[in-house]
Each structure stands twice: as C-alpha cells, then as structure tokens.
Amino acid sequence: MRSETSALGVKAIILAAGKGSRLAPLTDTTPKPMINIAGKPILEHTMESIYTQVDEIIIVVKYLSETISNYFWDNFLGTKITYHIQDDEKWTGAAIRWIKFEEDFILINWDSIFEKKDLDNLINSQNYWALVLETDTPEKYWIFEQNSNKFATKIVEKPKEFIWNLANQGAYKFSSEMFNLVEKIELSERWEYEITDAINLFIKNNEFQLINLEWKILDISYPWNILEANKYFLEKFVKSEINWEVEERVSIKWNIILWKWSILKSGTYIEWNVIFWENCVIWPNCYIRWNSVFWNNCAVWNAVEIKNSTIWNNTKIWHLSYVWDSVIWNDCNFWAGFKVANLRHDWKNMRAMIKWKLVETWLKKLWIILWDNSKLWINTLCYPARVFSSNTTSLPWEIIK
Image 1: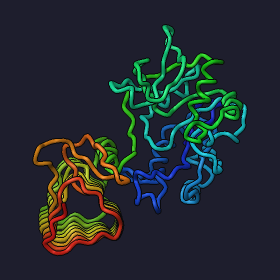
Image 2 (image 1 turned 90 degrees about the vertical axis):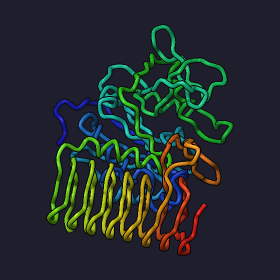
Image 3 (image 1 turned 45 degrees about the vertical axis):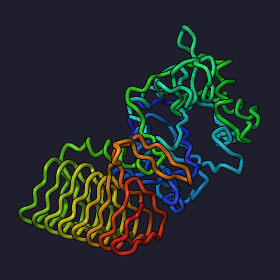
Image 4 (image 1 turned 90 degrees about the horizontal axis):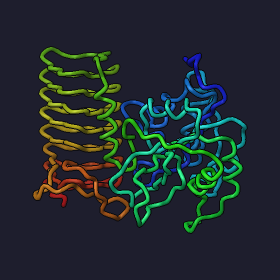
C-alpha cells in the first residue's frame, strides 16, 4: 500500500524504451526491463523502491512495449502508471522531449537496479540532484565536475584529462524546466538527442548537487550481470518458503524458495540460498548451491552438480553433468556427462564474445551463456566463457573451444 508520507508533487519517469542489444538474443523476445532477477522483472524492482514516494510513475516505452504494459497495467500497488511511447528520435534526451507537467520529477534509467535508500535520498531532498559514484577510471564514464560548494558545474563524456571522479549513475531529480531545455538541445555527433546536453543547460540555471551512492547499483548490461544481481537478492533471504514436496533425506543448508508442484527428491543436498519456481523436479543425489535460480518446468536428473547458475523455463540437465556460473535460457537440453571448464589455465579474468567483440567480464569464473532451444549432447566438453546463440547443437564427445 502507498505511504501517507509520500512526496506530494513529485512524479517519476522511468526510461524503458530500449532493447538491450548486448543481451541479445535474450532480448529478441524479451525487452530488457522485463528480464527477471530473483523472481521479478528489473523494472518491478525499481518500482518497488519508489512507488510509495511519488504520485505517478511514467514509463517511457517503445521496444516490445506491450510486454511491459500488459504486465503492469495502469497502477502499481495503488500508484498510477502512465505510458509514454518514444518516437523514432534516439537516445535519452529524445525519451522525454514530448512529456509535459508542472511538478518536480525524478528520472531513472531503465537498465540498473538502485538500492531503495539511495532513491529515497534523491526523491525526498529539497534540492535537485544526480546520483554519482566515485571511480578510479573516469575516462570510461560520463563525469560530473563540481565546484567548492559541491554543486555540479558540468557533465563531460569520457574526459581525456582529469576533471573529477564522480561518475553519473543515471538517476536525477529535476524541475519541470527540464522539459523546456530538452526541446532546445540539438542532435549530437552520434545523431542522438542526449539528456546530458540538457543537464548542462539545467546546471547553468539551477544549483545541482551530487549524491554519492551508499551502495553500488546493479547494472544489467551483459548476461553475466544476471548472476551478480541474483546473488544480491538471494543473499537477502532470511527464511525458506517451501510450498510443495521435499522428500526424506534432503539436506537444506540456509534458505530456499520451493514453489508449487516442485519436488526435491531424496539425497539432494542444497547449500546456500536457491530458488525453484513452479513444476521443477530435482532427482536424487544432486548437489545444488550458491545462489542458483530455476524457473518453471526445469528438471535436473541424478547426480548433477549446479552452482551459481540461472536456468530458465523448460530446461533439462541430464545425469552426471556439471554446470557452474552459467546463464541458460529456455528449452535447453544438456545430455548426460556435459561438462565445462570455469577457469582459464593462466588464471586471468574471463573475456566473452558479445556482438563480435571480446568483452572483459572482470570475472575469474564463468562457464557458458546459452540461449533458447539449444541441445548439447552426451559428454560434450566446453571451454569457459563461451556465448552461444539460440538453437546451438553439439555432437557427442565434441570439444567446444
């Protein structure tokens, strides 16, 4: 229910129009804001943090917009929701170019999950602010420069020379003047309307302060970020919710969620927090651990070990297989004896191929990213940090390098 102390006269705009191409092919059928993290879409986690503090939530949509509107409809736990469809003009400045109202508002990027207390600080302040995070590599980010009074003086993209170390995190509080300023900005060199150009205009006319995040945001930019985000929420579990069948001689250490029609069969050993949604079957003598999430209709056969993995709907992992640190999408099959290495021989960080470029993951351990309807046959062996497209298949005993 809404709080009686909500910040009257403050609205929220959430930018949720983009596709999230670095998460493709996952986002070929699911808009990035609707990717599930620990049981809820990214967008829902954000709305849970703000709905008691604002009078209205405006969601800017475009790509697969019906997926979002059909899920949330016209309110969130009593707080009004409206939808603004972004036209073909590009980037964040274009997203709010045709929105108009008189109240102050917060603006939040759609691809991050913020700690509630950070958003509370932003909403309830009497000043206009942006959330920032100190960084050791300012040349990689949009950076705010500030004066001796700690008011922002400008924002600069990837400055070649040091101006400050406060990286923009994509959450702001503005007055309605911002709508007029957005109409004045011109196309950037990338042929996009960029919100940062309007922010620089806003800074000239207003005292604009910077709030340091109390907790680093969850940025869901790449598939492996899903694992980090699930870990964050699962580690908050304080008690189990067991709603279906646990056979005798099942060992459960810490906490689990076991939803309806899901069964844990005898001899299964579960360590740390794990989620099993509807109609999952974990067959005897499996070892499941460390922040794993199983979505609907998953099956894990005898003597399988799974650690720190997210496994989506209708996926089957057959006996004597070994799956660590992986993101596995819908309708996949791992036949008996499937194994993947999750460390490099030289112990360096993993790099993964995203959009035909090797991307640094900053992770020591990463297995595979496997998309829809893939079938990996018996005794397939795979090198670590491999990203597979939908409908991937392997041959029995194949080594995938």
